[in-house]
Image (cartoon, rainbow, N blue to C red; front, top):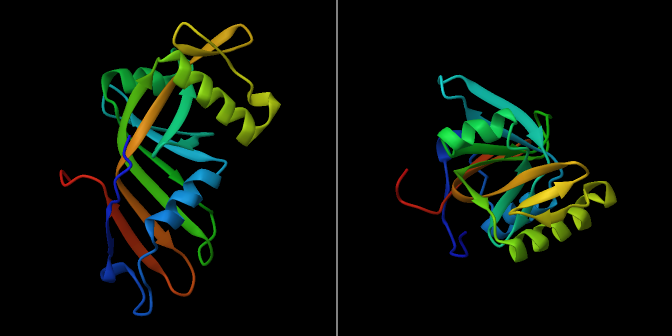
Length: 173
C-alpha cells in the first residue's frame, strides 16, 4: 500500500486546451465513493476476463473479495496483475478512473476485520462478513480479500473540458 503522493501529469494529447490535471486527493475521493468497479484479469491461456464487483478504498489501496474458486481468483493465482475501473457510462459528463496494479491477498485477521467493517459501512448489512481462517466468511462460503496498491491511475474527465490525467506511483511503467 502506498501513502506517497504520485507524480501527476495532464496528457495534453487527449485533453482540451483549458483542462488541468485533477489533484490526486480528488481522484482518491472518487475511488472511495465509487460503488461499482470492473475488474480485468487474464486467464492462464491469455484470454481476458472482466466482471463487476464492489470495492473499498482503504490505506491507499483498493480492496475486493472473491471466492477462491471464482475465475478472477484463479486468474490472480497465476498472474496478480490487474486493472480496476470505475466511473460513468456517459460520454460527456462524469469522471472515469482506471487503476493498474498487482493484487496481494490479505490474510491478517485484524486487518480483515477492519476491512469487513469498511464493507458493511459502505454497502450496508447485506455485505456483513465474519473473519476466520484468513478470509471473509459469509453464510456457508468464504472469500479471499485482495489489496491493490495503485502503480498507475488514469483519470478521464468527460464533458467540457475533456481531460486525461495520469498519476504514477512507480517509475516502472
